[in-house]
Image (cartoon, one colour):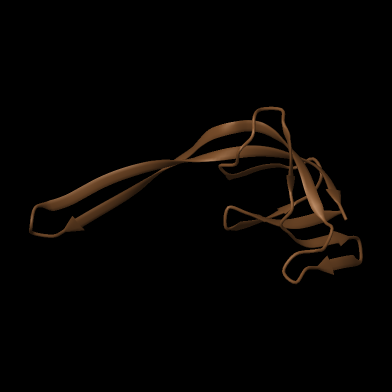
Length: 104
């Protein structure tokens, strides 16, 4: 059984036992949260597609790491022959979730 969920303007394909790194969510370590934005649920040959969400479906997950820093992304601006260059870096904050169960 697996589901497609949407959180932080991104979509993730998850199944019970998966560890997923999503954009920052509120929650403390060890706390259980419910993700209500379920777009698709598949159980073998039985597939339910939402319009836009599957009614009554939710995914429960446990917060493993509430504030993990992501990989550094560099933004660099440059104009040739003008002595102009700007370098800026950012590390986005993520939440690590362990998927417990999919409820339909």
